[in-house]
Image (cartoon, rainbow, N blue to C red; front, side):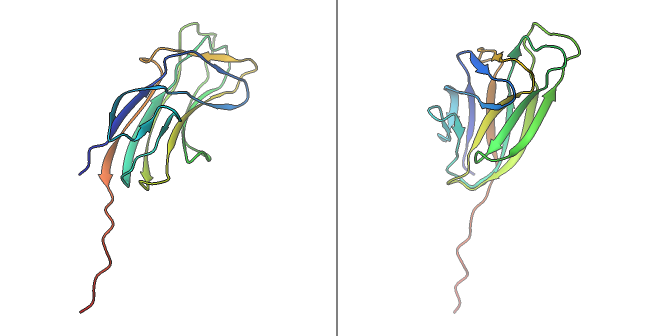
Length: 153
């Protein structure tokens, strides 16, 4: 089986406008075995078809009381495939953020995964810029090998 594993992190603060899902800029990949993570696009796009386990967390500073905060994995830029929601009961000055984990079948050519954060509050929030707080990682669980058609005699 082919080894594919990655971890990608943020290194700068990113604003999270209210009412939208914002793609997170993962600009450093300290682990990128198989070269599937592209720091220029912040996408994981492996070149091997298979089932992948992808996990992510996005920590946000000063989330106010009752504010919805979601961490989402998007596949091919479409609808969210998995989500975690945090809704604090009082303003939390320390960074908080839900973690999400999912298994996806990726085709090894055009499929890609991105990390988004949704801010359901009324004011912009800031993503925690620490690589230990905001990251996306994943690995190949099972490679899908296509078999050539059977030949008849």
